[in-house]
Amino acid sequence: MKVGFIGTGSMGTVLIESFIRSGAIRPSAVVAANRSHEKAVRLAARYPGLTAAGSNGEVAAACDLVFLCVRPLSFKSVIDEIKPYITADQIVISITSPVLLKHLESALPCKVAKVIPSITNEVQSGAALCIYGERMNGEDRTSLERLLSPISKPIRVAESYTRVTSDISSCGPAFLAYFVQKLIDAAVQVAGMPREEATRLASETLLGTGKLLNEGGYTPESLRQRVAVPGGIIEAGLELMERELETTFVRLLQATHAKYDEDVEKIDQLFFGSIID
Ligand SMILES: NC(=O)C1=CN([C@@H]2O[C@H](COP(=O)(O)OP(=O)(O)OC[C@H]3O[C@@H](n4cnc5c(N)ncnc54)[C@H](O)[C@@H]3O)[C@@H](O)[C@H]2O)C=CC1
Ligand SMILES: O=C(O)[C@@H]1CCC=N1
Image (cartoon, rainbow, N blue to C red; front, side, top):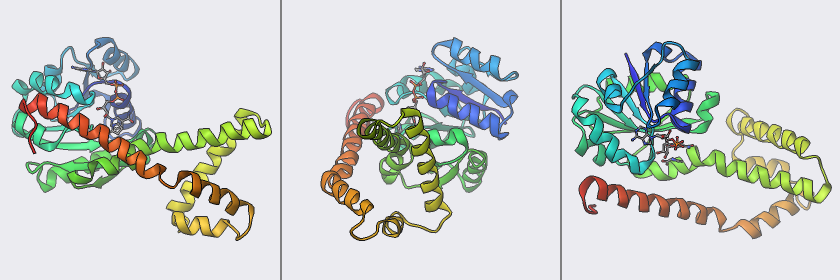
């Protein structure tokens, strides 16, 4: 089986490198193209056997499965380019949420899916959100999830939950990193702690907290209750966060959803020439 990647920017590269490093795909089974060809050529130099294709059409013609790893507003032109080479038995996958199954299904004659990866897949953890078009049969779904398993936990989601699940899974690493960064900044500012030391400590804490939530039998709520002694220091901190951040996370998701709606509207216009429901 040949696996194609169109777009070898940040996420395309994460996927290719993670698949290869985990042994899920051999370099010789990968065909990749990028608008600036040198990026694909650099990958081919790093992974002997990998093909740096000269065009997106070449990827589509050569592969059974094609991951589209470009930004949302580039999808229409990429799909127009590859369409002449696509046949009914191929699988084309969007890795971005605002390109909807209806866009892909209306524009391509093949099986389509969305797989929303996460930077956490770089260390073979975190989720890969799987959203399937109707042309993907049970066997297609299972074999795609088998391919994703060495680098992620494939999780099937309904398309209506794409946004909120990617908020947690794909945006989550950036949101949590922001929180950690602010904690480090405060340690430096309030106590003059060396930044590197605070960073190492905060990173260990995040890792340990993740383990407690995944393997230690805790929920976020039970963990908080377990460590926050009534009237104690942690409780004083939590009370402040509760006051200051009460509406922040709802507004955070409202902001990502508003941007998503904007993108979907633009993509609707590109694919259908007008907004449709
Ligand atoms: N950054 C993240 O953590 C995640 C990103 N995604 C999705 O991945 C997609 C790509 O994002 P990034 O990799 O961060 O962006 P990026 O800008 O780093 O990569 C996009 C790549 O596509 C190439 N490209 C643009 N137009 C092209 C064309 N017509 N033909 C071939 N190549 C073309 C660009 O040269 C660039 O290398 C986005 O749609 C994003 O929503 C999904 C999950 C997580
Ligand atoms: O399409 C998405 O939802 C992902 C999440 C972060 C960037 N793109």
